Length: 133
Ligand code: HEC
Image 1 (cartoon, helix red, strand yellow):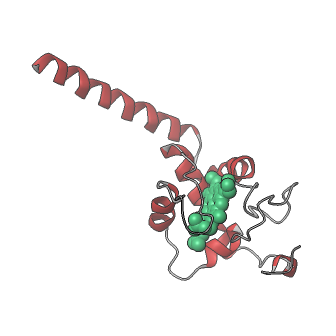
Image 2 (cartoon, protein in one colour; image 1 turned 120 degrees about the vertical axis):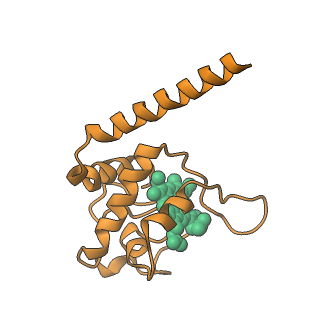
């Protein structure tokens, strides 16, 4: 039993070192850019990630653009992380966002991209609610 516990503890240390190392490969100043690239791959089906993204959201329900998310009063890295690390879909009720299953590094990058938009120029007026189809 002691042996098994040791092996487990050892594994945890190795795993956390590995993820620290992964996060350190990208310099912190590059987090928003790397997060943007990732979000352009993962989130564009349902959100306006960046006004210049190649394809718009295919989801018919209107969602907040990332710039709007960033500008919500009281928006913090903590709140974003909590949202992105949990599942929202249920069998009943309106369409909710599925858990995007991001790993720790992906979370850090995407959160830093979203928060970087707080100071960005306002998005073009065309993505106002209720204008689409
Ligand atoms: C399958 C469609 C879908 C995908 C893909 C998706 N989202 Fe969402 N997202 C939604 C919907 C629908 C909502 C609004 C309903 C809700 O809050 O669950 C939402 C809401 C959010 C919110 C909360 C906005 C608020 O009200 O404050 C955040 C933050 C968010 N998404 C981030 C992301 C990120 C980051 C990704 C990519 C990793 C992503 N989403 C991918 C559908 C999606």
